[in-house]
Picture 1 (cartoon, rainbow, N blue to C red):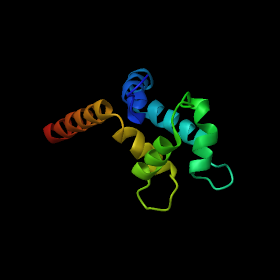
Picture 2 (spheres, one colour; picture 1 turned 90 degrees about the vertical axis):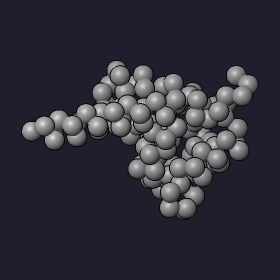
Picture 3 (cartoon, one colour; picture 1 turned 90 degrees about the horizontal axis):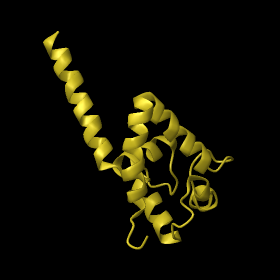
Picture 4 (cartoon, rainbow, N blue to C red; picture 1 turned 30 degrees about the vertical axis):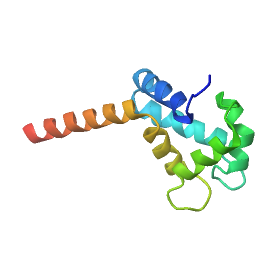
Length: 116
């Protein structure tokens, strides 16, 4: 698809996964995704491991500059790689709908706590 952004895949996928799996299940799946994409020796996602393993998640059509952009966007500590936490944060940031659902759930939980 021309003009599809790297985030479009996750914007569509994460809310569906969250509905089917629930919060804990979604986190588990994100962790599984991280395990698939990471460099097994280094324990982080590098550009090379992302390039090599992205086809396992159906992302083989992403260009190098999109992979580099994805790494840079998620790399919170600037080390050029993604830790598991950075990967999960990035996946949530790429899915605005899921973030809205998360905030909504948080607000509901806070309201419930305030009532008790």
